[in-house]
Length: 581
Image (cartoon, rainbow, N blue to C red; front, side, top):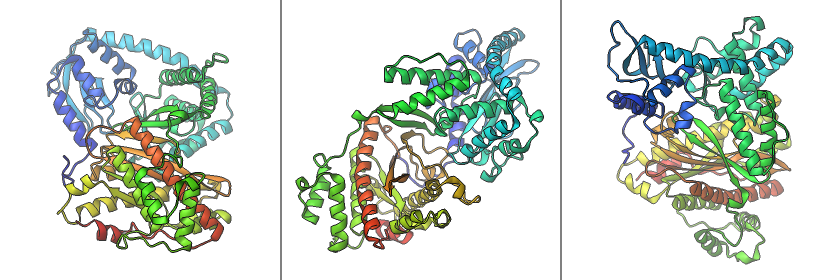
């Protein structure tokens, strides 16, 4: 069980651990454990990170044609293959590779000249196939106007700038907006001397390398196939034309099967396939809920979906039992008298403000805060999570006024403390930390503070992008719910709280007929045990709908009355007071 005081370097420690484990392995077992981070990443995803030469070496080893037995030193007077990782996690399975700073090398295995020639011949065949697909890129850059190309760069730049950190490969080149590895956009900071997308905005077109053309072209059409989240589905993949064709073919086939349709025509080019994929996905949205599965090791995000009929729908008849009992007793409401959950919550909000409902919790919450906390607590219990949380804006009236006046500058000026995050631990989690003083309070506060930052980071995305000040960075407000494994590798908040598994369920609020995505969310986390299942995710969606009805009723009541209400709990002093145990 995690001690919560143990220091960890997250992903770097994991890479060191895997390198040590595989040093005494050999052949296919060695390489399988390498590319999957010791069976922590699906093999199908892992294979898409390999260069053509690495793919051939991997296949040769798995077929028994190429023995691999590692030694710690480079073989004398012999060619060799080096095995290990770049610090970002990119596998090293390379011929005569020279170790670079920050690499993690498991060892070296000698190679015969005949093996190298065979590997190079097979890799050349894969590259020959890739070259056929690359003709589409060459034709575009030969025929397109400079304005078309610059607009393509602008689209890629804008999407990379406003999406979560990730990274993509083309052969041994890494393109990343990922924390210290960022080498795409200077404003995102990073240790690189060159920021590729900044350079390409002004670089003369005749000076572009083919890799740069490939990066822009393929990434642009990947985005066009379904929005910026598509890029995250290529995290830690090779952005080969071959890989992109394979991905788009899979999506088209998958969507057609679910829609029970035949293909209208057979699209051949990347651009045609991307647009067709986007068209089919839009059709899918009428009957299917899209979600994602995230592996924190590579931050790869896999698209999944299930029918809306599989998602539990909150009604007045399947309300959480303990919450129904609590509401019935406190507000003297009969559930059968309400047409639905929203009607019920609106009556509660109205009664709470107009009748000054007494809340008997020793001043810990007001009545809105108590309902939020109680709902999170039920979600935590139902999914066996260690803790749950919900974040949003503290003062809905201020938000309403900013929207009414189209005042993006005002909204972008709000500070992180203007947002809140209610973090609710399970009883078991609290018991593990009893008699440890401020430790629990510090953990919950750290999580809450990070979630305040997330809300702050999403807020500009609720306004027309051209109205957002140039110096105000933001992320696109998320739409899809997700589950994540190995969350404790790169994300500092998850690393510090040793959160291994998580669920995120963002939800929208509607005001004045406009939808504000991710205005709040429900998140669930745990440190150990089994990963969250799809059933757990559906349970989280159910409790998210409870919160959605509460937040929507609060928004509507404040919009009608213009009452000046603020959620005042969940501050530093509040967590210290109530969770120092």
